Image (tube, rainbow, N blue to C red; front, side, top):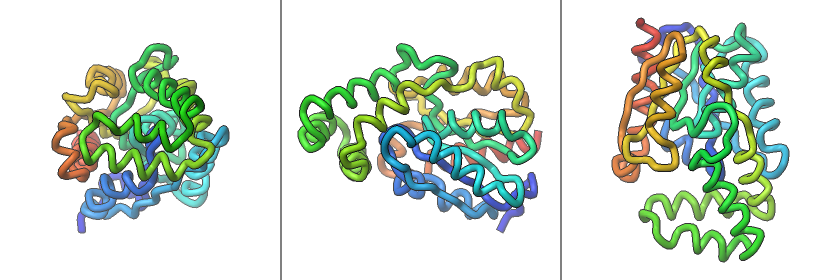
Length: 237
């Protein structure tokens, strides 16, 4: 087992908008174990308290010692936000597929979440899920169906809460001095690689590694490996 370069023993990874801890586990569990980190993967608390519950999970995990914080999409945003508020409790960041910085406005991930929330309210969860997965790859249809079903009647509120959340601005990200591993997909229109590139450019100690959605579809750990590898490289630099 490889010893984490920062000395931290725990990594807390948060899910993205409309996603869940099951997907996060499939992405990060093995790559984190390979570098000697215990994975803590909080399940989403659906509804208007979604964000506050995620931030509280980070607080709880870092109660006794610093942690590596991170997540996918919204989870990456919240991890960076938490790190800015808790610099003494964050030993590093694992940031996969950031969707925007600052105001969400017309960011594709935010637009998609708002559209999906409106669809849920108009059609009902079952019909909205069926419509959402009609034209996506089979692996993504499976993930969306499981995760969205788990949100129950709070799905629409959860999607809207995520879509309206400010992410750290580029100026704020420039104040994060911990090692940061950033991962992006070069074929992901919802999480443009340009966003991950912009985050990496301003973070003082960051490395970007990339993969592709078509690879994640058959090997979810590819996203986790890219993020963890980027963090390892950032830690050594």
